[in-house]
Image (tube, rainbow, N blue to C red):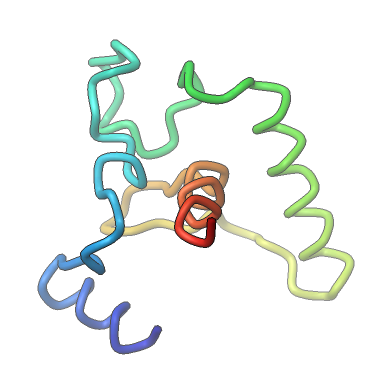
Length: 95
């Protein structure tokens, strides 16, 4: 995993089975053209807003309960990462 992360940082290269557009919200299927590349777009029609909010709240609570709170949301290349989309994309890879 570390090697793949370093490869991404060095060459902006993702593993072949990962969908860059899905992970980073770059597809225009949502019709939202005014976001900055759609990384943390809260207006996505792909998933219910309540489900996304519940997932993120559970994640932050879990991390806080185990003593490793998320103080700042994750970023890639100074752009926010949508944790819910990342979770859903990883779920697809394991099915």
